[in-house]
Image (cartoon, rainbow, N blue to C red; front, side):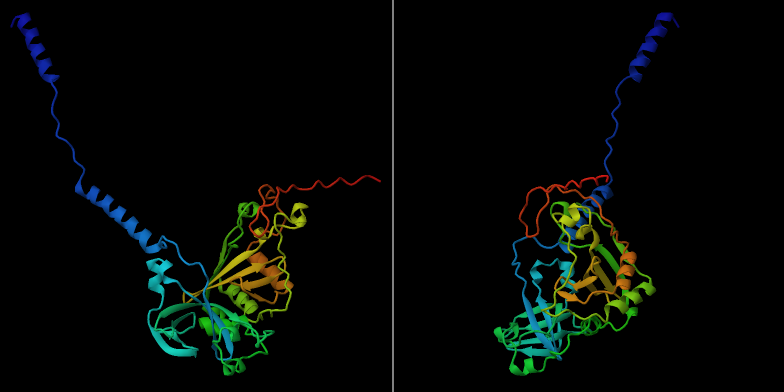
Length: 345
């Protein structure tokens, strides 16, 4: 082969080797698209199933008071339209035995339930509502001639005469009637967390540690502390030990913020029900759902509970700017006063 012919052949081979080759297009497998579609549908379903519906609702708290045996118990009428489907599924939908009748309303136990946490109410027009336990109403110190009992016309003279006006139920008695709890063995856990509601300015900056207790020994002592507690009557003055970011005690470094020390106690029962309490360690005051206040803990029990919940009672500087006074109205920016150095004699 001549040299020229050999070079020509090499050129033809190079041109062939460098020619573009059409590669088949790669398509994503169908399962990838199906998985993406499934995830999107699952996300949408979860948002609908677990989140409350959007819209404008009536925020009025509707409370009814009924007589159970010789006590008064208040219940909230639930607005089920504003609850997510998941929570609506957990509500009772069938009425059991009749518990009590007041005026033109009949109150039923929830079918199959062994407690009084939920009730079914049927009014005079046949409308059915679900009630959720709110609180025991203390009758000690209540004026029976001028109160919610007689003003709304729900209670007859016989109803009022049957009330126990000599003593309010202890926390243990209330738990037994409403939740069916008779011993510490029916407590599953207790969680200490920051009190819901401390919002705005310095209060919202405070960070506290959430602590969950599950050991039976601690739960038994806690039950033994809380069960005998008696509600405070209407005339009793209570010391919360509330200290806000605008108070001199905080500004001078003498006392910590209440939002740093107070705790919401969520007690989970074996039945799945939850008891919500609020605890103020500065004074040992305990209240239920922000409405019912009980006699204060002893010094020893208060110190033990502070240690159990790992509450830091020491003063900390959370700042003073953008502080808001209680009541929602803004106040002037607070400044920490300068404490003069002691003069040498």
